[in-house]
Structure formats: C-alpha cells, structure tokens
Amino acid sequence: MMQTRPKLMGMVIIASVLWCAPARPVSAFMQQAADKPTYTIPEYNAFQAARGETNPQNRIKLLDDFVSKFPNSTLMPYVTQLYLSTYTELKDYPKVIDTADKVVAQGDKVDAGVRLQALQARVQAFSTAFNPKAADAHDQLVKERDAAKQGSALLQAYPKPATSTMSDADFAAQKKPGIAFFDASAGLADMQLKDNAAAAESFKAALVNNPADAVTNYRLGLAYLGMTPPQSIDGFWSLARAINLKVPDADKIKDYLHKAIYNYEQPGCETSVDEQLNELLTLAGTSGDRPATYTIPAAADLQKLAQASTILTVITDLSAGGDKAKMTWLAICGAQFPGVVGKIIEVKPGEGFVDFLVATGADDAALQAATTPNMDVKVWITTPPAGAAGAAQNTAQPDVTRLAKDDGLRFSGAIVSYDPTPFLLHWDQVKVDPTIIPEKADAGKSHKKVPTKQ
Image (tube, rainbow, N blue to C red; front, side, top):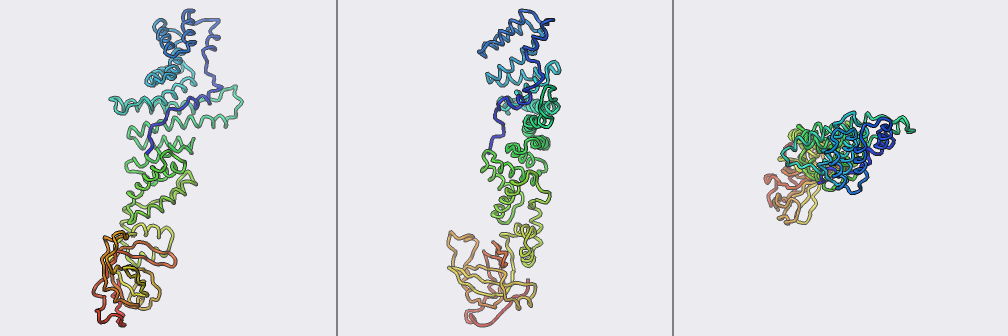
C-alpha cells in the first residue's frame, strides 16, 4: 500500500497566511535600530555579507564565522533564520530540524510568524530525515509530535494583521490548510509511536479543516483499526472515504479493505463482502460522516445468528428483505444444513445433475398442501467435472432419478444463493437420504412419501 510518510511540501502553507504578517524583516530591524544601534558596524557588515552570498555553502561558512566572532550579537535571531533557510536550500534536513528548534526555543524573542515558518520547516524536514531504526527514534517522534502540536496551536491563535483588508472569515479559512497540515503531522508521529488513539484524534482534527484530504482519511482508517480494541466500523468508513477521494494506491487499499471486512465478520461466502464493500464505497462517497445507523456485523454476531437458524427461519428472514435479510444471508451463505425435508414440486433434469424444485414448510400438513417451490435442490447424478463449482464437495447419486413429483425429500447440503422474488433458495453439495429413495422396481409409481417435518 501507499507510503505512510508525507512528501516534502513547498513552503507555501504558512507563507500564504503570513503574507501580511507583522514579523519584522531584517531591513525593518535595521531601520528601527538606526537611531540606537544595538550592534557594531563589523557585526552589521559580517551579517550583510552572509545575507548577500548567493552560494549556500559559502553562506554557511560566513554564518559560522559570524557566530564565532559575535556569539552575543543582537542580530543572532536573524542569523539563525538565515541558517534555517540556507539548510533548507541545501536539503540538509537534520540541520533544518536542529536550527528550527533553535528558532522556536527563542520564544517571544522572535515573531510568531517566524516561529511558525520554522515549525513548518521542521515538521516537513522530519519526514525525510527520520530514521525509524535510530537509537533515539522514540524521542525524535515525541519531539516531532510536540512540534506539530505547537505549530497547530500557534497558527490557530495567530491574529489577523491590523493592516489586513481581509475579512475575519476569510483569514480563518486561509489558516485551515496550515492547521490541518500540523494536526495531520502530529497524528502521523503518534501513529509511529503506536498511540493510535491519539493519532486518530489528531487526524480527525486535521479533517475538520481539510475534509477532502485522502491521505489523512486513509491514515485515520489505519489508526482506528490499530486501536485496542479496534474501532473497525469507523476504520472501514475512513478507508472507504480515502478510496473515494482517489488516495494513491487506491486499488491496493480497496483490496486491503475487502480483506479487513472479511476477517472482521467472517461470512459464509466471501462474495458477500463484495456487495458490502460496494455499498460502503457508495455511502462513503456521498457523506463525510458515517451515518449512526450504518454498521457491519461482527463474526460473533453472525455465528450467533447462524447457530439459532433453521431452514424455516432462514426462509422467513430472507423473504422479508431489508437489513434482516442482509444479515441472515451473511450468516448462512455457504452454511451446511442437515436433515432438510420437503416435497418435490417439479423435477428438472440437467447435464449430469437433477434440479428438484422443492417446497418446505412448518409441518406435514403444510408440506402436503404446498404447490409452489421455495427451494432449488441440485443433486449430481454423475461425477461432477473438475472445473465445476464445489466439485470436490459433491457426490454422485444416480439413484435420485427415481424420485418424482410429489415425492418427499430429505437431504443435507449447503445454501449457495437465493432469489428474492419469487423466492427460491438454491442448494448445492447435496446428499439425499438414501432411505427415502424408492427401490428400482417402484420408480415412477405414486408412492408420495413425505418425510417427517424438520
């Protein structure tokens, strides 16, 4: 499936918010300090030389020289900022992280806008710099999570500049992508720390501000499924949302979701999951939030229903349609039932098999009175071909050809499908009770033996 680390992004998320920020650029600092300089001319010249250097490697050397000569300079905050932009230019991501931490550590000595840009640079650089096998990997992840949370809080509190002509609503909307970026990054760090519950909260916070983010929906789904106990339904929903939003590797994630649903409910027929998955994808494509009424039954629920089912309750539930029919079918599709009884309404010969259209009912009187079949019982009379569905589970019973219309039938078999209207339950892997098959001499006679009720 898709990689869990974000790609390095351009420095545009925070920059779009800070285009009219009150942060003091170096030139403004110089102008403000013109009357009362807080630095010496050599400091000023050394800093301007580094600032004007176009070669980033040479610029680093000049900055190192400045720090060596003027460690207590009032220009140091701007030197640190220049270090940060230069290391970013050089793609030296460990140095970006280290320098960003130094900028943030200065607190209110630097403008909030500068700290925000440093936090974004740090969080983005981490995705490339982090080595999960490092001895201090856990500590690195904790620092990354804390930096992302700090960035989210700082950006949420960041005020609209007094000189801005933008409305409060537009300014708040402009901050949303950046807040979502920080929240999603905190969630990813928590996920790598194996704290899936915390990761889910951060991902949900990110989606409040950027609900159409396919990758965050995907990660939220994984976080839900990774909880103890798993929040399976919410996890399935979030993965379906990600697929609908065209997440990278959507086909692989769809296969994963199919397997996850199958393992969660363990239905009798794996093909039942296909219908559930299609329904889930349709619903998740029209709504961001999972409807409170939407659910998928767990394996324990299906097992309990299957154990309590009889042929009569199965037919009643499936005939009723709706959610009850869906759940019943999940529970009993492919299930084996012994001792099923009924009356043959029609015999339909096939190629190597015979289809008995059979009616079953609650008691002998109902069987005797029945005229409409509700079961299609397929019995092989020759060895099934190797490619036939369920060939290995079927046994040839040529003697069943002696059974005729109105004869009774007792058999065991597996339910493989059903037609809702007119209702017909289809059986395969059938073994007819040999004691109800008439002797060869009696074949075709009107014996009408109806087995005892189930």
